[in-house]
Image (cartoon, rainbow, N blue to C red):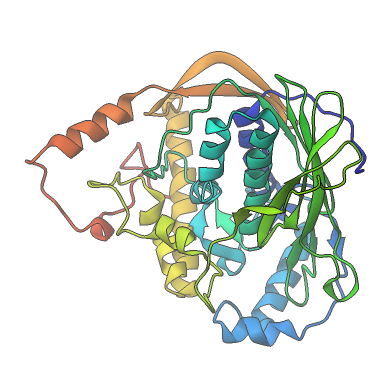
Length: 404
């Protein structure tokens, strides 16, 4: 029977999920150590093989000499806060913002619907755990998403993610990056993932196998769903990049006689030889074809640096990224000179404070204004339709702010 790790109390399902996403964004914005989007990375084998560089170059992502020169430039800043010191090269980015990356993690949200509809509290944890495992599928891509511009938005039309009365606490396994300098960069997450139902005391403990020699054990996940008395109820097994299965088990963790292993989640098929290793869902997130009518000009889809990178124009992407960052700095100077305070349009600041591993954070709540805006747009026949991709990206408040 698999051992049970100690519980770690948390603030609940969606708070835990949001905190997990915040860790990715926090690491990205703080230092070069966050280039891949994870905090506290352990860098393994910096002198690894270089045979994969030719493969990457043929895909059009980057040239080996470019990566070497960028690394020589960046290594002086390792361990430092480089937010105001250097503009990170688009070479390490993917054509997606962090807002879109957060949306991408909802690709398999149907598992949460199944958990919400399930009467068996232990089977409910099977569905929830499978969804958390599915998040790692998107983390195979080690390029960095663009940091959102202040005031930037992203809209995805999906079902309302409200769940009934269950508070879950997640303790994810640590992540580490391999071959960050040479060869193909890849991420491994060895260790326990612990998902606890704070309402009932039931929990899931899944062990992510470390990658061994020649890739042995990589992606493999095994563990159990336990009741509040720490008795195993279901065993779970699979690979975090492919599928997860479950089976009822006895008190010793052995499969119940007459039961069978059933698949609970399988990764969706992805386009072959995709330049950015995107799934169909990830492409949908970037697509204007699935964008809502009268898209907000602050939407991530419209970012010119993201669009240029998507079309493999690294030179233009770099110029546009620098232009946006300089414009954002100019906005900040104007705001400070006027003594203004930035206020989100669609969210209101509350008096609540959320405790997270990254400090005390203010809590904003949706104010309902965007729902009214969207309803008015959808019900209006007088609004002139324009080509969505011809709309200029505009998250700005001060339209006369210019870079220094």
